[in-house]
Image: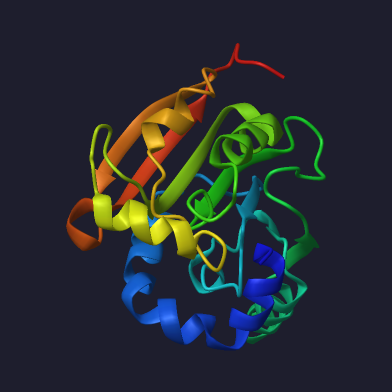
Length: 205
């Protein structure tokens, strides 16, 4: 099942499934954003808009997602929170934005969802300005971690909702223009992580 179709079915249930355990970590992740006045921010994979209440209001905000049903929920949440954000239907693996379009990119629970995590991070890097930052909150295996149960679950889950076999260090290795600034454990004993990357001023695109 294509993720667009599965998340169309999941859209009415998504908030109930992930909001309560994740909201505090979303807030912690977004608190890392500093000096945002007049800056451009992309929420890449905005889903139903659970990040919206915690986004800075002094920035130019754009949210993208591949699923129209999720974007409709994000639009409603933006209206309820009086958040001025442009919402765009887009695939994180092929973003419809020009090179160097954004000062900051938020990627919450998206790299471990898309079929090609490396491609999604490369696309985020492409549309990020040199010196800009990417803030990630997601679940990743550690390098060399066997995690037999997680890898077995991935055979089914990757076609429905999410992947459980992504090793972030392997994904990052395909984006040499990105430098790891911070990588700290979060939820579920460190399976979920808060990660900050910065694009080199001389790096690519």
